[in-house]
Amino acid sequence: MKSSKMMRTTLLRLARRARSRLLSILSPHSVPAAQEVQRTPEKPSAQQGLCGEALVLASQLDGKTFHVPDLWKVFSDWPLAANPHAQRLDALVDSLLERIITNEKKLKALKQANFGRLISLWYPDAEWPELEIAAAYSVWIFVWDDEVDANDTDVSNDEELSRAYYQKSLRTIHNLLGLDPVEDGQEPVFEDDESLHPNMALFADVGRGMRATTDKIQRERFYRELENFMVQVGVEHVHRMRGSIPSVEKYIEIRSGSVGCAPQIAITDAMLRIRLPESIMECAAMKALWRETVVICFILNDVYSVQKEIAQDSLLNLVPVMYKNCDPEKQSLDTVTRDIEVLLQETVRKFEEAARSLSEMTSNDAQLSKDVQAFIKWCRYFITGVQQWSLESRRYGMAKCVNEDGSLSIVL
Image 1 (spheres, helix red, strand yellow):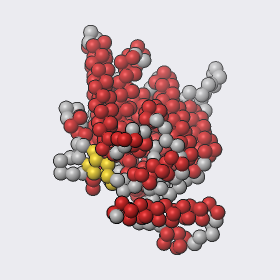
Image 2 (spheres, rainbow, N blue to C red; image 1 turned 180 degrees about the vertical axis):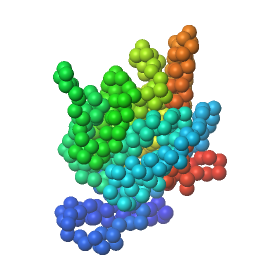
Image 3 (tube, rainbow, N blue to C red; image 1 turned 60 degrees about the vertical axis):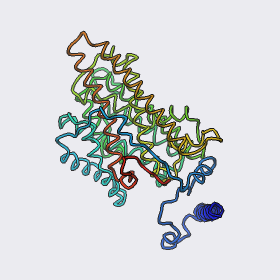
Image 4 (cartoon, rainbow, N blue to C red; image 1 turned 90 degrees about the vertical axis):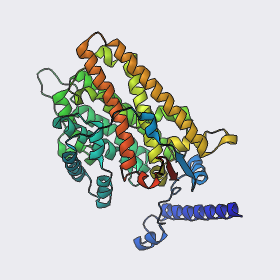
């Protein structure tokens, strides 16, 4: 009886949303704003604007509770610290957001996300000049990504516009990093701040900082990682627009790029005021350390952001993707929880293996060993920073989902 009532409620909700969606497509300007507000449910729709496999998946997950164990136990012996410039960072981040966000509602939400706290946790030992670059970069990538993901912009709802957005952004990044070819005897010409897309204005700050503190090889590596980030954001966006859900393996490949962690790792030595030799930066152990750092971070991000993302019509998240790809006989969110625990523990194990390999490789050179240990320690800070901030930030609303034992109960 209870199951039948729930099914009727779900079908009625879907029918109302389908009608609303159809009206918006056929007559996008014909409905007065007041009437639009009356039709909008208090809770954001988890299925509005979805199609294909994503729509079916959303209806299957609607109202279910995703249980997450206390993941701090996985990182119990990893460092966590905050930068002493934390308050100054908060003010800087707010000023950066005010420079580029004109929508008051969006500005308020982004300020409440407390990105300054996240940057403070990521870079507890950094000096102020490096924090200025890190803040501009971090705010930029969040805002740039939201333009594609948030489902409330022209770019997020049009494949052609999104493709043009990526291409223009990459051209601008290449220029601002000082990577455009320059003829002999000529000075490089950089795009004027006033001519930039609003979402690229902060990258001008990043470019200036990177040109002053890094060499061309470092900036080229940074650019390659940003290029891969934007390519994978594009792939993710196509899946979202078409309502398709990839396999878990394919999703991990896409998400490893679209999460945007690799570009940040690429500038770590500059943020730490060290310069690791290319023989270390390009070795197999360092690449493994990067790879596992990225995977750990996106696992944490996906777990804590799943509620928010489904509310924004995005099923491209590890939790729904794993659920969709479950063996039909074992398909449940409890199965997803177990699979995520296994994946996280295995990834942490590989991270530790890579860290040991790097330590052994550099043990005969005291300065190099010290610098490599600083890099490894930063990767740990990066991960625990994501963990701590994700639980605290109002961006994901996890505070209301935490149980007394540290586990979470997240209603989708």
